[in-house]
Length: 235
Image 1: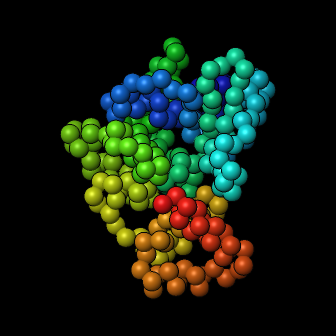
Image 2: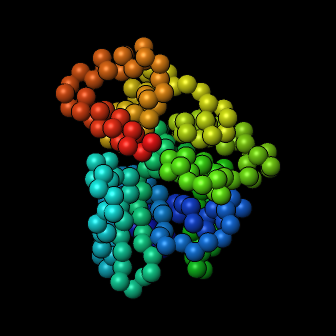
């Protein structure tokens, strides 16, 4: 995957999987897929490159994913694992481009199968891990202990704030209520609809009313209602 991205001069970060083990954030485990965060403007180009070398799209296992997909999954008959291409990572309210650039600034390299792969650093990996855990409400087995024990907590919190990863800051005990303007910005664009709905669910009623008033078109209202409905089904 890294070689294919490099051959096309596409920036991509291998996230989760061996990256988390490398940073001491999770015990080693066998991965059934490879998660790749790609610079947003180049996702389609990398997807096309995968098709050219024999990978095919996997039909979504989640019926609602077509509403607001956050990844494209590819399979290959000769490989035992899937490849998930992410244009953005769920749980982050910054725009996909802003988020990628922030994560790329401090990226490192890790040798995987004798290939130097670009990966997020320990701080960024902690944010991604906590965001994924909070979004999926998985068990506490994946709660990273390293940020607290090594003095990384403030760095993780600062990066989470910069990324708009409100679930992460809340998990770290540093929750900050989002302003109305932030909520409105989070809801703009398909990638922010569900995340904005999650934040709005906890907003005081005056904020809820202002948000509703801002949805001036029927289409905007329908998108917001779909996000709220999805949030309620997850509870």
